[in-house]
Image (cartoon, rainbow, N blue to C red):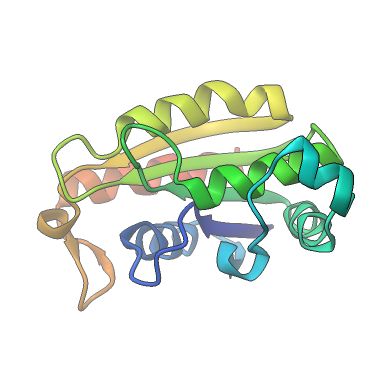
Length: 175
């Protein structure tokens, strides 16, 4: 199984990129390709820009990249209770190429934040909307208080209960 993994943020110091990289590599028997949405940066979406630009090559490339795997794993950063502007913009452009952005791929959705909420608002939104965009969500996981629960030196969750829960969640891709 090939997993396409990404953090839904443009931050170069993303805690969600650390989480998704760790989590994707926990899936037994999987190969992992971690992508960076900064490689697909596009102008702010609007119908006027779409009329002028058409379907940007980078949006098509992102769509194709998602389609190149057997499964998709995304870890969401939360900005004011919602998606980051960078991810939402890329998603909007990609959905204009094909509304089935996730191409019936199995998905694991994750989220983390420095605070105790663990970005659960954006995770709930992403989980609820993914099926409308042809995503087959197999599991979700929220890591609260990232800096307390993730050992950045070792690159893994340091709380045994949370680590076990994440392992069980991501390995639902094998079922």
